[in-house]
Image 1 (tube, rainbow, N blue to C red):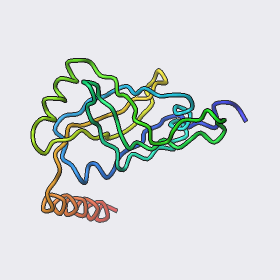
Image 2 (tube, rainbow, N blue to C red; image 1 turned 180 degrees about the vertical axis):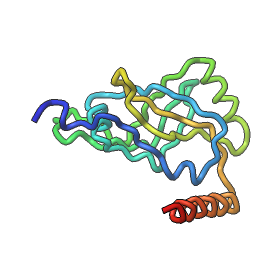
Image 3 (cartoon, rainbow, N blue to C red; image 1 turned 180 degrees about the horizontal axis):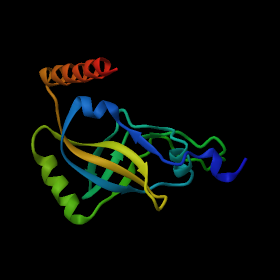
Length: 154
């Protein structure tokens, strides 16, 4: 087995729950500070971002509740699965996000994690507002209508 065969070529891990629960206002692509074997687990797509969210600590943006499973072949120095991880953005983008978070009802959530063409892990985050119950019903209705149209075509 070759070295590259155990890792998937294109990693694109999506947070499907986020698009149902939130309406996105603005999106950004951020780098993520990883430690040890975390990149290997991401390349194996062993990431759960269901309950993940972002917060500011001392002017820096961190992602919390992002579960990156420990690497199977790691040793005693394996990483902590739910550790806080720092996100890397430009100062201008950080200021925009911080002022956006100061508004009532807005939050920053991760939409997807991917590996770019240089092999670096990136997180796509969004400034989002929570949907009301009737908005969720409307999105379910639209999704069902699209599904019905697809069935009618075939």
